[in-house]
Length: 339
Image 1 (tube, rainbow, N blue to C red):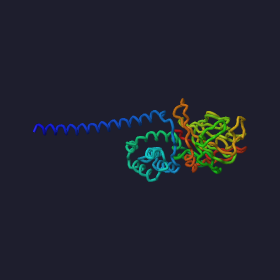
Image 2: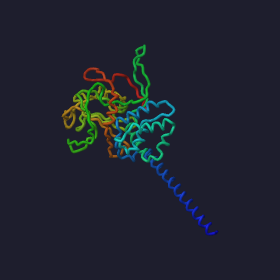
Image 3: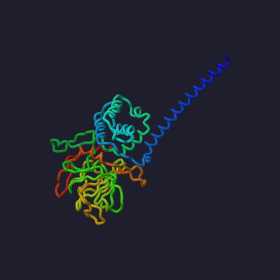
Image 4: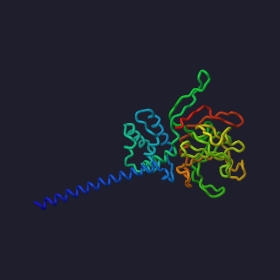
């Protein structure tokens, strides 16, 4: 009888030890995952590179869920949707299916929190930070002119949705292909860290999102160029090869804030020369680049491929009207909430 009791006790002790080990492993896993999320969220310097492969189709679908849920009980944020799918696909959106996004949106619409939905998604926080750094200022509240009041003053309507614009004004034709990473030889052999949009000289070039003008002037590689910094400091927009003799919109100055959709310059073919104001390009085009900045002191330059983003913004182009002497301005007044 005593032997049977000892065997039973040993079995129970083994079961308890096994259960305790499983519980401990679960606690350690959750703790490790929580620490990983905390580090990624609070220390963005961990992101040394971002491969932005989200397709225009996925961005369009995510934006629609975001806009349709705005102001409702369960708001759905488009970057959350994209980050969930980024974690699922390992960042490769060639696997994108609408049904995958719909399944995530349905769970959020039913009241499940994003924290509950992403529990166990090890890389969700990484993609959340990465995609926020690319897309963070593109959707939100803004006011747009809808006409004039009886007194002649501009009338505005507050809206919510996409508040970023294509780099080329509405009504001007351009062609492009995904040329990010191709080789360049002028000066020294290097990769093409931007996107070329081919059009006609003088085409109005548009500010994508509300930014601060950081750099104006000549560069031997980019010719006349503009460098803009997003208000959250994360994105640096680079516009190059602007028009000879008249590259910039009238009144553009370093340090000023420029609203999304404003005309900032004119497409040209300058650059590839040590001689200022020289047309060194073979075809007129806009070089458009986006650099992500996580650490001001880092020498690591994170340039992303903007091809799919430009395709996405292609349906949202700012109209420009002539003001004479080769200058243009945006057609309607616009104010950004700048939140």
